[in-house]
Structures are given as C-alpha cells and as structure tokens.
Image 1 (cartoon, rainbow, N blue to C red):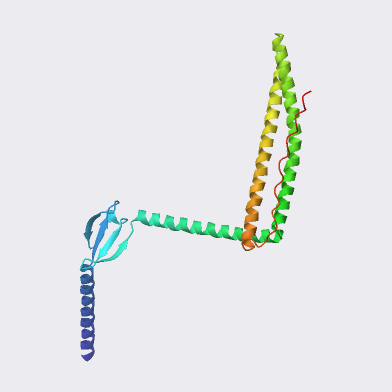
Image 2: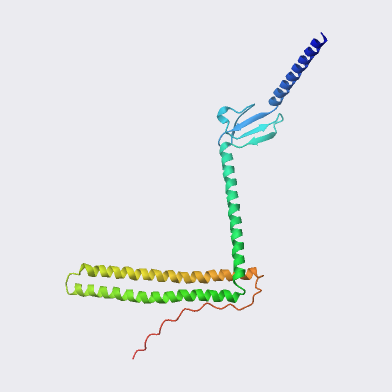
Amino acid sequence: MRNIKIRYLTVVVAAALAGAAGIAAHEASAQKIICWKDKSGKVVGCGDKVPPEYQESATKELDKSGMTRRTTDSADDAAKRKAKEQEFAKQKAEEQKKLVEQRRQDAALLNTFSSEKEIDLKRDRDLQVVDTQLSQMQVSLKNATDRHNDAKARVAAAEKSKKPVPDALNDEVARAAAEKQKVEQNIAAKEKEKEDIRKRYAEMKQRYIELKGGGAQTTAATPAPAAAPAPAAPAKK
C-alpha cells in the first residue's frame, strides 16, 4: 500500500514539473517578438514566428521591453557577406604571395651584386647586346628597302612604257614591302627593349640602395652608353 502511494506521489510530482516547464516555455516564447523584413530591408510584420514565405528574409528578435536581442541576415545578405569575406581572404593571400616574392628578389639582388657600379656594368653589357642586334637589323632594313625600291622602280618603268606589269613583279613589290615592314617592327621592338632594360636596372639599383640602408654604397653611377651619332653627310664640293 505504501509503495502505491509513493508511486502515485512520484507521478504527481513529475506531472507538476512538466506542467511548470511547459508554462515557463510558453511564457518565454510570449516574452519575445520576431519581426521580419522584405528585400528592401523594411519591417513588414512581427509575431512569435516567421511566416514560411519570409524564412529567408532578415529578422530581428525583440524582448518584452522592445529591445533588439538578436538579428539575422537575409539569405542574399549572407551570400554577399560570404563573398566579401572570400574576396578579402583572396586579397590577403595575394599580398602575402607578393611579399614572399619580393623577399626572394631582394635576396637574389644582394647575392648577385656587391655594389651599385656592378649593376651599371651589367646594364651596359645587356644594352650592348641589344645594340649589336640593332646594327644587324639596320643592315637587313637597308637591304629590304633597296629591294622594295628596286621593285617599285621596275613597276614604274613598266607603267611609264605603257606595258602591263607582270603579276610576278607585283608580288615581288608586296613581298619586299612586307619584309621591310617586318624588319622595321623588329627594330622598334628592340628599341623598346633598350628602354625596358634602362628602366629595369634603374629600379634595381634604387632597390639595392634601399636595401643597403639608403645609400651606403657611394660608388658613382656609370652612365648608360649614349646612342652612336649618325654618320656625317659628305661635304659638298
């Protein structure tokens, strides 16, 4: 009989506790309000739960006093924030990669040259190589120009004598013109290469000075070789 009473009391207590928990949960839910927004960010409704059609919208949760306790982004805002975070992480990775590469280049620069003068000498050697190539190209340009002028002269002579210009001669003029243009383009590219060499070595030397402490090397810079002067025209008799 006593055991029955104990079991009865246990059931009653458990039921009372469950009921109290349910009441507390209900009161807690009644003490908060959730407001949801449309795509423009305007609040369009409030209640104890978000309607299905606004499940992906931004929301804010208010307590019974009207204070905002929690907010959530919309699905679009969350995606945009994630994209920004990924872009930021990518930029940081690129910056780190550039920093590592700069350190590698600085170490190579210091290991390669022991003074500013050595940088100038290396620049001059590289420029001399290009100048040699340019001299060869100038000869090629003269030959191509001569062939082009000769072919055009023969076309002009045929036209002057009112004879039909052979197709082979027109083809020769076209080939000579194309060859001349190609050589001129190659010469222009080599001239650009010389400018790039000067610029690259100037930046290299400036960086070398910075790494050495802002000018610890006092060796005078060797000037870049000046362009060869054009041959003087023969004197008129």
